[in-house]
Length: 370
Image 1: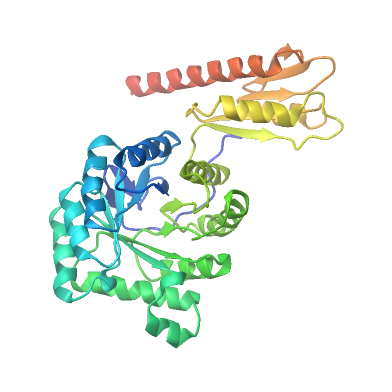
Image 2: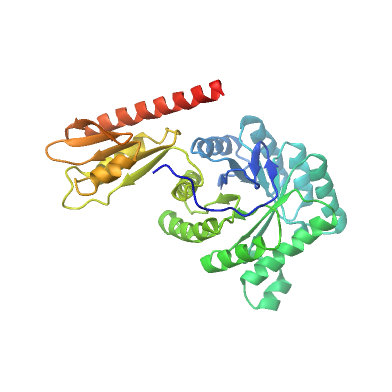
């Protein structure tokens, strides 16, 4: 199952968010956003670290006030991951967090007032090499666009985005990325497809206010999956009414399913049926929980019977094909050993960890020799 993704990505200009490249030939980055009170520095730092440990490349932090801006500065000192400051309307907050070490400003230039204020933010961003994210949302379109289109539409989202782009173009500032989010899957997909044809900057993908963990995951997978398969998208956030750590997990699972990035274990598991020779669901739940810390890319097949088991197991790095009385383990496509039902999960975990360690050591050795 080791093959390259057939997806041909849209060519886009590359920008840098801290040390993370976004756009061009860079891997599609995974983002999340804190939901703590930013002025609670300890709680926000703790959440950022959990988000980072889950595999996020970038974290966004809401900065609604000058007090939050000062807290942001303290947070910046305590974490290593690139931080985006989410700012609305007040240009002074943007100027302050720029001085405090922000890696990207999420601020729409058309919403921060007079040209003098816009120019001040753009000049600061240029001087400090800080990119800007233009973030258009169907729920907060300009009043004249709401009147023009009657309701949020893909065309309205694109027109709003291009307004902000034109402002940055006029100031000769190209270091930006754009999002055109909607909670409606069809609207978001159409807007991103339309915008992708009109600008060269990287696109930040998201289905905004997607819903709870299950429903939001489905909506995000449908919408962002369609765009990613079109080659559209350079960074993404899965917006869930859930722990931000879950957003990161879903984002990674989405990218792994499309072979766009590899991190951790890609499980191939049967849904279980009466043919199963062990409890597949219980086994999978335990393995996923126990092996969350592994970052080495591995394909692991867990199949409960001999009908599909051997075929799937042979294609994985490690595969389990359920059988009676013993379950057959394949390693790199070859039968390796048989495991009894007792301590099945413990033995599987041991084998998977060994395989991950061996693979990581082998890859490091290749790098050293190169």
